[in-house]
Image (cartoon, protein in one colour):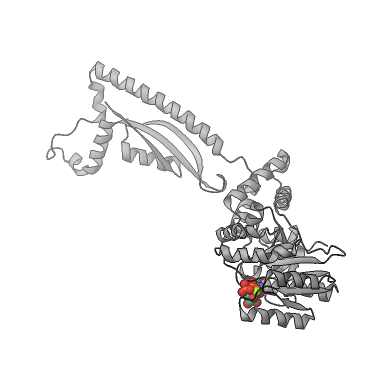
Length: 402
Ligand SMILES: Nc1nc2c(ncn2[C@@H]2O[C@H](COP(=O)(O)OP(=O)(O)OP(=O)(O)O)[C@@H](O)[C@H]2O)c(=O)[nH]1
Ligand SMILES: [Mg+2]
């Protein structure tokens, strides 16, 4: 005789038992019941469910299925074919058959016991040890596009950093989250001038991300607000309009601009700005797949070391593209990140994902087309506000740390 063991899930025990009865018949033996949570975050906020393990012998299961299929036949025994032996009649089975059945039932019970031990052990490993506030903070990170892996790392680190008695305290949990985010957020902030030598800063990156606009914004901050002497060099001679664009800004700002075509030109231009506080170098936008053109930029910049190289990225692109771009521009040895077009997205988790995966600090955040303005030196506070879903302007202003 073969046994049939099945697992049933339902929101309540009653419903689960109804399934068992319908499926296996009323002779089914209930071997185990347990409650568990389905879905949610780390098993939190999930739906409470009941699991029932039930067993019956195949014959009675078959009989019950047959009874379900032929309810009328049972009501009219005279017209029906010879009925199958119902499960109850097993009482009249031979002692040998009965012993066989008992021994099989024992085997099934043993097997089930082992299985249940295993699943309990697994359950204990996966059951969430975190309090509900951790679940809602985790959701907040996910809703803001922080990657699942990073969000889980953050929650785990929060858990490690908090004393047991503080874990249910919302304020303590939020403070722990802030600490973890600040730990991850590498920020280099505004360009600092080094003193007697001019600080030389180049912006590189994909096409149309806002390099030229950002150079104009930075030039404004230093030339007009900080009253520093600034020189601009453009190596973007690829598009005719590019030179015109930078010349317009240079006239408005009253900042000299030099156009360079070759490495020798670049060297001369940098030398000619030796008396300046800040030299800003604009480069042509390059597709990150165009390794040959990225190498051209590297050759041009090679003559003006030491310099800071800021990889400029649009904040609204996919995380995968950010990773690809940050990889493909590596030959340029960039040492800072600028995020532009923050105004063209509403979630900022990607910034955190990228910063956490690259050992490069963020210098500036840009959030509009207007020059001057719509640029802010990056700060942990601003990034933190952004990733926690504060409105953009509020986030960057509140993040200002002077
Ligand atoms: N919304 C928004 N638009 C921006 C921002 N920065 C630049 N732009 C716009 O993006 C477009 C391209 O800006 P550019 O400064 O020419 O970009 P680029 O990286 O120099 O472009 P290439 O030199 O062609 O590679 C322009 O329309 C800018 O006004 C920003 O922070 N937010
Ligand atoms: Mg440009």
